[in-house]
Amino acid sequence: MKKRLFLFGYIMVLSMIFVLPAVAQEGLPDWTNLGAVISWLAVGGGAPIIVGMIFAYIAENIPAWHTLPKWVKFTVPVVIAVLVGVGANYLLLQSDLIKAISPYWALIMSILLAWFGSQVGYMQTKRAGYGANYKKLNRG
Image (tube, rainbow, N blue to C red; front, side):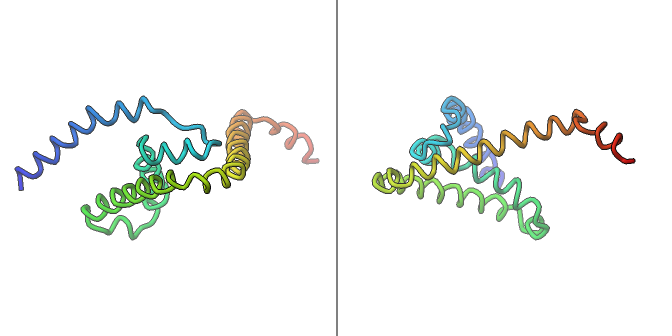
């Protein structure tokens, strides 16, 4: 058992040394370009990042997730990340489908990115207290 743990730790350290710099250098894709997003998911290290974010925000808020054994909580995200990567590789082969969907993808992602950006600006103005004095003055 100790030998397995040592080997696992050794492999993790090697993967951090060799794989993470390549993923960090790749950066994030142009979210409005469907081909770039699929390529990032397939070969740019995007699948583990996306799956990790989804599990961090969704699964961690489900109480039943915390009652599962550690090996399940480790294995499930890894398997899903591999499946996302394989699915993205398959989608890369479907160039006609990517060409057909790309304009709609660009429109939807532009709308989402604009909305997310406006929410960041809204929260900053809200924290600054913009409009708070107006509410106090008009409570007549």
